[in-house]
Image 1 (tube, rainbow, N blue to C red):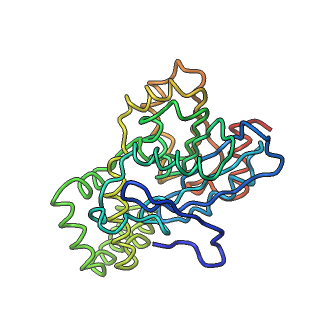
Image 2 (cartoon, helix red, strand yellow):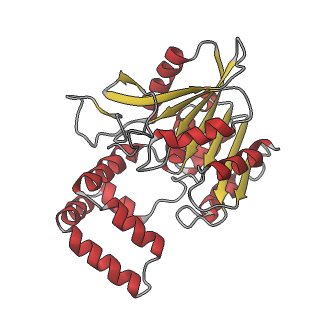
Length: 293
């Protein structure tokens, strides 16, 4: 599903490998070194376009090449015809091999890789890091999903009851909206959750995109133990959360923070922001937070 308007879309490329067509964009800063070119691999949030990461490219403090990846079922990233079901799992190992091919194709003399993941893109990043930590020199996770799994997500994605319930909601969206309005009126759900329900159930196409997107990424949810072990092998890791984020609050990282408290190369910080950390002014604050002024 496409989330960027034609005016917002920049130049994109695609690569086909192991049953997937993955769409991506490449942005190059000025004054690149002739060799040992730093590469930033970036993953956007759910139901958003890859162009969201352009603010990170512009704010980045060092010369680099940024490869912004469209997650499966976003833009042109889809399973190849005949490769399986639309909700087939994309395994972290497959995704890492696709990244290898993209970097080989697009970046001559590539050297240190930085992994940048925002929201669900952060969860994908955690899975890629857990699968192959030696790939990364620096891992940056902005308000990452994947540190706490909601019961609703687990029920929906992993059970037959959840499948039935999702497709029932797809056929009865007006009832869902009516109940959501009532729950908000009674104070049983927040305005944020109410808006989330409306946005992600706004059309049949959107509801199917949510279903396929959730199902496809169900293999990218590493355990805390696997994450902690991987981060020990990455030279630098930065977690940044929005101080006012009600979607992925800072407390989601409490367990991982305790597990890695003796590792000085792993940092947890906050900026004055809600969940949308990719706005220009917020991204500039994020970069200062990570790299200093």
